Image (tube, rainbow, N blue to C red; front, top):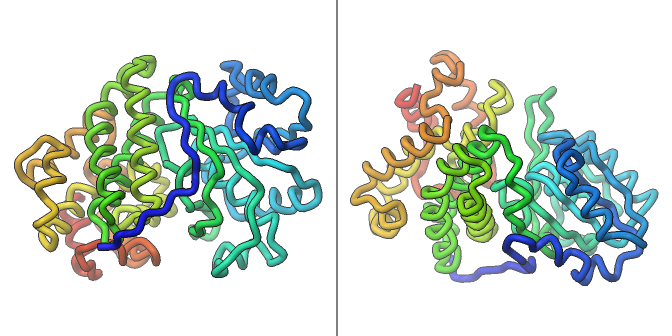
Length: 374
């Protein structure tokens, strides 16, 4: 088990935290700001105007058409625009896709090398990124506190990941009020992503004492809060707890990366259109059981976080959590048939993910797992 823990991002959490935005040093010092946002909800609920009012007197360029799961082509386009018209600070207000894009543009625009080359083969060191502030509107990917970003080429059925310390945001402003308008399904899928990431941070070859503290806390918080947040999106306590659980989980897996659940999920999303949080969650109960079979000494603390007595109970509790949140627990419920399992087996071993798993997966082991949840 590794002992080191690293977190350069300054995190500010709580309702009303957005009001601190103008006081952040990168915002104060900036004359020009690139503001990345996602869909139309920020405009509809007035939050975009509120943020723009906070930035009065500065030259603000709004990029308000960030697509979900942005392709590398969109990243390239934004990097080139940033190189032609650079800014002093990047501000991301949105979900994981928005934050991943903004962080990547802030970093890659400052490099001389080709962005796609950097994306596929990151160097040991990068030129310093443009200072970046992240404000998450989901709970969530944890991107506001992680050094990772993901891009999807659905045409070529390929996923691109970048992970480097240079990709950490300067600041994370986590204001739970920004998640109040999330629809139930988005709440469920992003929440399950956060829960899975926390579990994967704990059951991980790269786990360390600090990441364990964050992971177990996040697991406990999200387990309690997610069904309520899905059922009643205006429940302030549930939204507050989900935002806290998400950022806490991010603080955990930022230092460990994710494991088998994420690795196996990628072909599910690319080939069958399964939403990311649904795809990572569906294998979680089985993966946890396999990890516990080779790391039984870590079972007690995990079970305590879930308030259960055994790993078998833990797996059952996770399935119940998914069902309460409106998510599926079997592949057939997602339209994935038995003959499609071979595609997942073939493409389910993602570098930088699967090898972090304590249990050593073979193709036969993965095939058996998928058949068990068919």
